[in-house]
Length: 255
Image 1 (cartoon, rainbow, N blue to C red):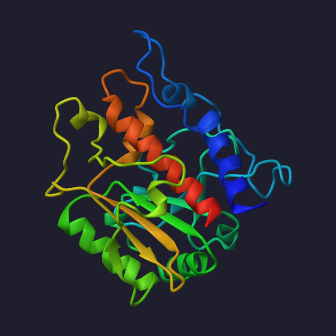
Image 2 (cartoon, rainbow, N blue to C red):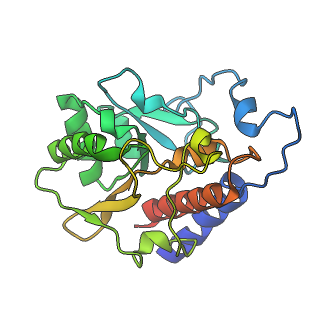
């Protein structure tokens, strides 16, 4: 399949089935899709045990060691894809990680990677994987993440992504960038946390110029995905976050 056809196929499937742009139509007392998902029994199906070739995409969550327990699982699960039926957590030191081109990690300001996790993530990125980090705030958490990622990719350069980078037009043409707040702050107009007043969309490239790490700092795309159906959550943030998600996924599947 050509890159163009892959982009259309993956992007259309995501738009049609995964990322239905939020509409504030939930009635009073009606459970949101996210709240209903919490009531579903855990599935025993896994990529290794499920039918071979059954799905083409897994929304893979990075499971990593942190200074506090289970930072990786904040806002877990987020949403459900018309692909593998559940959010899909994989430890960074799992050899199967290389099977999945898209990897999402949250609260990376609290990472404390073990040596096997460092080596596993390095192997994954060098093999063509794509890491998206999100929901970490302020100078202290940035310093911790930067220290951890430089263990994974020694000598890497972290840059501001130019607004004309293909990741911002992989499916949606994004021109306006927001600081996406958590659900509590969104209802007060207070968008920042700690000293993270300005949102940054940064990246790390490999030696061929391919974006391999997309860094969303001082912003929380995940909360916007999680609470998109809550009328009190501003539509502009959830719409932007979902458009970013589609673009990041399409980019990871087509570059």
